Each structure stands twice: as structure tokens, then as C-alpha cells.
Length: 418
Image 1 (cartoon, helix red, strand yellow):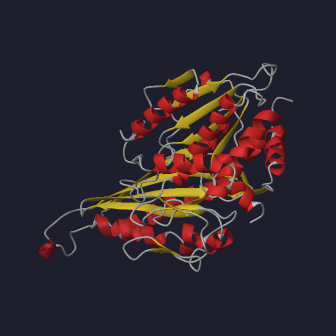
Image 2 (cartoon, rainbow, N blue to C red):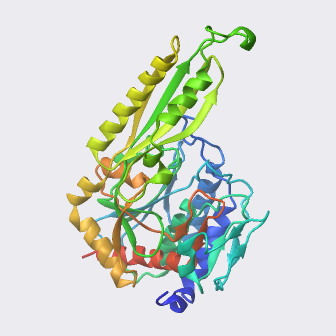
Image 3 (spheres, rainbow, N blue to C red):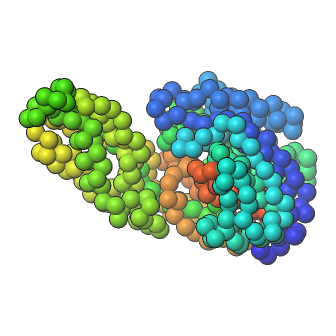
């Protein structure tokens, strides 16, 4: 990797690794089944630690509200008071798909390119994860294989905190008003539902919730969640012929109707999907929880209509049973609003080039709080944070990419003073 030695010897490298390890050890798993924000009490633990750390760094304007939204402000440097205010954002929660409790991060310095033994027979092997092979010689942070790491998005938090410390310890650094936003429940899709957007002064914002060096994500899925409730008829199985309607069988039948070729594991790039995330219940009542994703409104309409058609087909297959469907909007593709504000991306690409992270654009096969913030009128693209294998026991993070991401933030703040 170009400039690897220089990046790993950067004074920020050690700080970033220490922060990621410290934050990763704090359980912040969110719960999609809980409507309250935050959905889990553990997210407060990280939020309160960050409040304390911001105060120790010297940030005076810090607030943590009743819904666990943490907002901090760094005043403009002398002479830059009229610069456009900008924001940096990351989320505190981790995915509920893999345990985030008792995370045991391990730092592998100057990784030698060979498979990394984790625990319980698990191995982080470049033969299986091809992208890893590009990072020989880098310092990486890994899990012990029993939990996720939580670099999604604690790597982003670490980078923002390191940039804040830089601003406060280097008075010569040029920047306008910089707002820091740490949010709960991004992984549940509800993280921005109660966000106090009216209190934000930023005219542009940047999320740090992406992968490898140079990635700049300028569009995301349109996203819905779909819940289908199946109602059957229960009777003793020994006397069920012609009488029982099994809601579990109805739910299973519905899931098999989802086209496998348009599943998450069957698509990439700009292709959308249906994904059954949970199935639960018994003979009398069962449910299926889906997420539905597409990059275009036309594609999303087609998918939602198909969800309705699948439900009717199940009802027809199981006479006497009933299928009720509810769909709920989560977030929209941010591309159009970013296109309406080209300077937001122009400065991001310029900052990345200036620090040696040759930028390239790609879609997010998911979403960020930035997509929701963009809807609210503050254009917010996503940039790389050095995290890999998100939501996985094989999650890992690159120290060199974390340094680069932090340098991009510092340069961005300078560019917005022009």
C-alpha cells in the first residue's frame, strides 16, 4: 500500500488504535424490536464516556439529550468565523446480527499476510476474504472470533475524536464552526427519527461509516421494512386434516417466494433485493420481517407490489388463513440532493486527493444516518473509515486507513474556510 510506513508512523496512528479498542470494548448493540430511542441502555455508556473525553480535550459546548444524541461544537479558529459551518457524524450502536457483548479486540501490528488465528477454530484468512490480501504490512485490529468488532462505526467515532483533539491542540489549524454528531440506533434504521436537526448549524455534513481507502459513497438504497403477519387456525395435530391452517407453514411459504437471485447474497453493485431478516411465531400466528432495498423509486415500487402479491398468493394456497402486510419507509437515496449541492462532494474529493487517498465513488449497499440527514436538508455523503467485514465475527479495521480518514476530516475543515 502506497505510503504505508508513513501512515503507520503518523502520530495519530497510536491514538486511533487506542480509541477504537477502548470504544469496541463497550457493548452498544441496538435492538430493532424496541421502538424507544435509544433502543438499549448500553448505548448510554459510550455516549457518557465520549462526553467526558470531549470535555478532557477542551470542548466546552457539548450536549447529550434524553434520546442519546450527542452534539458538540468546536468554535471557528481566529479569522474563520464567517466560514461555512460543517459537521462530522458517526453512530454509536452496533448491529444486533452478531453479539457485541464482551468484545475482545486484538491489535496485529505490521500484519505479515498470513491467516490470523482468532479463537474457537476461527481464522481471518485472506484466501477467504480476498480484500484482506491488500493489507499485508498494515496494522489491523481484529476480533477474537466470538463477537463482532464494532468498528462499524466506532472507527468513525475514533477518527472524529482524533480530529477534534487535533483542532484543539493545534490553534494554527484553520476551520470554521465544526459540529460533531454521535447518534444511537443507526443499525435499526431509526437513528434519526428524533434527531434535533433544528439545532444544527451545519450546511454540509460527512458521515464516517465506510470501508476501504478512497471510498466516497454518494448514493444509497431507498429502504423500506415490511412486516407480514399470518393468521392460521390451531387444532390438535392428530385431528387436523381439513381443519388446521398452519401459520408457520404460511410464513415459510412466503419466504420461499422471495427470488433468491434478488437476495443480498445474490446481488451487488446497483442491484436491489428482498431480505427475510426474521421469522417467528406458532401455528395460530406467525410473522416475517423483511427489509426491501432498491436504488430507484421505480424498482422500490415493483418490490413493494411484489410483497403484496406474495401475501395474496399465500392466502390462496392456505384457504382459511389470512396474511396482513405493513410496509414502513426507512430512508431514501441521497444522490439527487447531493447532486443539487455539488460543492459538498467537490471539497470531499479534493480533501481526499490532498492527503493521498485517491477518491472514487461507489453506492452504499445499505444506508447511513447521513441519508436521513440529507433528507432533512443537510447534504451528507459518506466516506471511508477503514472498517471491513461489517456485522461479522471476522470484522477488522485498518490503522493506515483510519489515519487517512482523520486527515481527510482535518483537510475538509480547512477547505471549507475558503
